[in-house]
Image 1: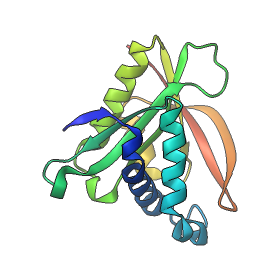
Image 2: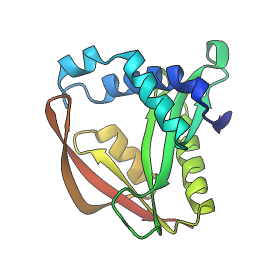
Image 3: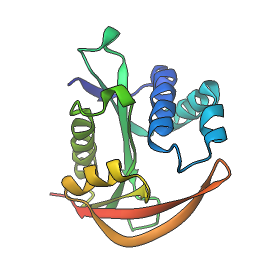
Image 4: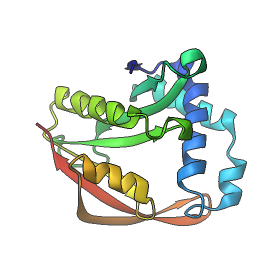
Amino acid sequence: MPLRLATVADAPALARVHMAAWRAAYRGIMASDYLDAMDAERFASGWERNLETGARTTVGTLTDLPDAVIEGFCSVGPAREGSGGATGEVWALNLHPRAFGTGLAKELHDDGLERLIGAGHSSVCLWVAAENPRARRFYEREGWVADGGAKDDEIGGALVAELRYARRLA
């Protein structure tokens, strides 16, 4: 499947995927009012800022869908929790629901890990909603292990319990 680094011009498409993914994955975990009221322009502006500041985001398209539009993304970089640089982080891996089950998630995941290896990271972590069994199963199939880290993030007025997963890089 075609993968490439995102550009600022991709911000509206990234916002569309981001919102669709969250609405599918987090219904019942996050407040429905928040999910329903997500604003495409606000999300696109956020993506523009992230991409302008050097966020490393890979986007994936599915050529069998109309217009080969962006259907998923993976953002990676240094771990946000001060690990001295050895640990990278998968900041986000999201797919539009119509791309579920296509293999795009694995392609984006593997590309993200390769980018982290190329940046010199020897281990990697990510945070996943505790109540997101689909994502947790995916990561566990890919060799990730919950390492005991846990936190609550307030998103849209609801506390979302998150678990940290980790793994070594090749």
